Structure formats: structure tokens, C-alpha cells
Length: 391
Ligand SMILES: *Cc1c(COP(=O)(O)O)cnc(C)c1O
Image (cartoon, rainbow, N blue to C red; front, top):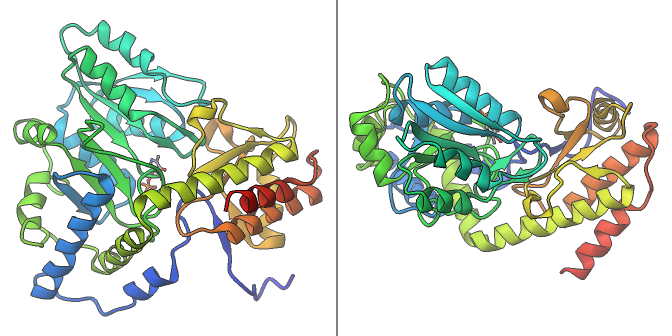
């Protein structure tokens, strides 16, 4: 392969950033407009209306020119005071990063450990909340779709546990990689703050992030939280009502957002979710046929966004990823922190279809046969058979 020129499309099969569709790229290829002018307010009001449909909320959604990490911080500083206690669940790498951030900005955290290989067991939270008679815990922070492990948690059940115990804590959920790929219901599930980002299910480049805010969280933020300026919800919401922002927004990314919201609407959100479920299932058929282990151990928690695949002991997943990148021009997700070298992650989210999946799986299968990882052939065949049968 001549490395000076790589023909065709690079396969970006990470669980985010995901492939940006041509329609979105074209929509962004437009001169930047005056963000204080009338054309801009029309654009942003449309974006706010559309994004609320995706979060399934009637309340405010704030859009930051920031990565998902920024929106994590925003959620915390608007509602939580220094030295307040928040409860988190260590579902994987991203949950741990959020906890580290909370500690850095002066929040006390308690983290419930798990083996990373399943979604959150709500009874873990229940047991801890039962002991918190004086409501010391101000928020429960959980990750909806843990992108490092391929396990999804049931958010509705977590809220039910909190409601049954009449616990006052806020429920904050990171759905950075879940939103717009798998079902998410901010209002119905009783979530107080949902955090998301642009570069996963929303099919945009990185650079936008979101806080979807319940009435309760908004009213708490008015009298609580930390000293803040850039992240302050009130400033944002006040300006957003008329379609403007307190500072220069990421104008061209908003052109992209308007287009991606339109695409989600054309396909229909529920169809988008079904497509993700089906492609994820086909992926698991392939992995099982290869005789490799899916990292997530509980079928009820299988993620439709990505599949983390274990390589057998003494083999290195990063070497496999390197072969696949060099020979077939495809990027797969790496194993993060304690999973480094132990798993590779196949992203099957966003702007993606049957043949793109089969190309992806074929790249993995060819990579496996070039590597010295023991496996059985026929994964692609199994996936393709399933795709045909489930048309
Ligand atoms: C991608 C991701 C993040 C981090 O978002 P950035 O945009 O990289 O800051 C956090 N949590 C989850 C679950 C993610 O998938």
C-alpha cells in the first residue's frame, strides 16, 4: 500500500468521533454569519427546538462551544457547592474521569465500584441511599452508555430507586455517547441534568456540548452551585430565549447541528434506535462466531453504540488495531486505562449502514487473520446472514 495516497474513505469506526455525513459537512461549508444578526437567531432557535426533541424534554437545553468534558463541568458547577457530596458509579473509564474532575473542582465524591463489565445495578444505589437519612448526597452522577466498555445502564430504574426512597438528590446523567443512538428520555425518566456532546450520535465534528436541565436543577442552580461565569446557565438561558448567546457561539457547528437534527427527524428517532440495535446485534454475531469474548457480560446491558471485544490473554489489541489501520485504513477504538491492550472497540453508531458494517467487520476479520490472535473464521458471514434475515 502506498502511504502517500490512500484511496477511498477512511473507516472511522471509533465509538466517537463518528463518521460525519456529507450532508452535515456541506451544511457547515457556508460563510460564518453575524451571531448578533437576525439570520443567526432563526438558526439557533431551530437548533434549540430540534435538540429538545432529541433529549425528549420540554425544558431548557444549553449548548456550549466545548467538548463533552466542558458540559460535565457545567453540570456540576451550576448545581453543586464545594465540599458537597456526590455519589458516582464506576462503570468504566469515563465514569472515573468524571469523578476525577469533580474532585479537582472541590466536590467530595463517593464512588461505587463495579467490575466494569455490566450496567449499573440499581440496588447498589438503593443500599447507599438508604444509609443517607440526612440527605448528605446532593447528586447521583451516572454514565448512560459507558463508551469504554460497551455497557448501557438503565436510567429509569435508577430514578425509581431514588423516588421510592424519597431521596432529594439530583440525578445527573452523561449520555454523551448514548444520545441520538439509543433511546433516551430526559423528562420521562426524571433526569435533572443530562450531559451530551456533538461527535457521537449527533454525527457532528467535536466541539459542541449540551446540558439538558430539569426545572428542579434550574431552580437549585439559582441559589446554589459554585462561582462560575463561562458555564453559568442563567446567562445562557436568558440570551437563548431570543436566539442569541452570551459569547460567540460555534456558528458553523450550529449549521451542522441544524442539518443533523433534520436528518434524525427524516429517519425518525425511533427508527434510528432500531437501526443501531440491529447493527449492534449483527456485530455481536460476528464476534461470537470469531470465538472472541464480548466485554459486556450482561445481555440486558449490551450497548447498541459500540461493542468492546476482548483479545485472548497474552495478545495485544493495540497491535491488531495497528495492523488494521495500516493495511485497511480503518480506525477502531482502543482499550482505555485498565483495558489498554486488552480490548478493541468497534463503533457502530451515527451515520452508518449494513454495508459499512460489513466492511468494518471484514476489516476486523482480515486483521485477525494477519495477526497471530487465535480466532475462527466466518464472523462476517454470520453478520451478513443476520442482516439479510432481519431486513
Ligand atoms: C466521549 C465521551 C466523553 C468525553 O467527551 P469529550 O467530548 O471527549 O470531552 C465523556 N463521557 C462519555 C460517556 C463519552 O463517550
